[in-house]
Image 1 (spheres, one colour):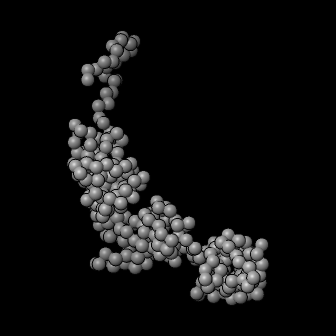
Image 2 (cartoon, rainbow, N blue to C red):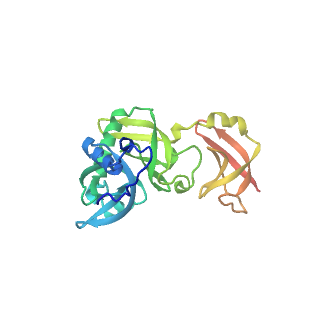
Image 3 (cartoon, rainbow, N blue to C red):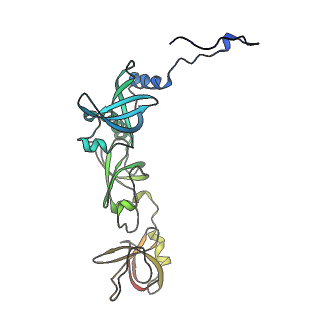
Length: 272
């Protein structure tokens, strides 16, 4: 397109002081990532079919990118759709400047990230994790290209009735490396072990025979969990003539405290 700017005379005008910005910063970022094999991140904004293949759509500014299913790190179309609305990492495979598009691989990015993570991982290290999927009893999280499974009992201290009420996909939290086998690429982590343990001191606050206010945190066939403070729950037997529900405020009498087992036995004396 011809330069259509209006040419006028301006007092003090110096052509040398006019800086023409002819560099497209978005394409500069894409070229740089391609040339240096570096990793980019962007939001998956949709799913499109290209050359009969489902592709996740990402954008670097106004430039559209496609991550084919086979390069997404996902096994099927349903899993590919689960990436929509999430930030993903990828490496630029090739580009078409004239068409204004590029293709990318999330799988290659994850592989590179995992290699770096395995090299740096150490037993007992505290690292950041990002939740990917959450079920009532399990969180699948990413610790740098490596997927780890964190069971409900390793999320935090205290009773958790339903993990989906505690953790959401995309949540960031610290975890501690509890088991590590680099040779076989096996690692276990615990979010609970990265937190301060409330149990060494709680026995000073809850004495046997005394009564304390708590909140019902879960009801199971074998008893009722009552939260006394963050990370500390007691287990009470069911009431004989009344039912309690999650969220009820109750008064409990402490029957016993076992700090080593992180257990408090109690009896509900009144529903408040």
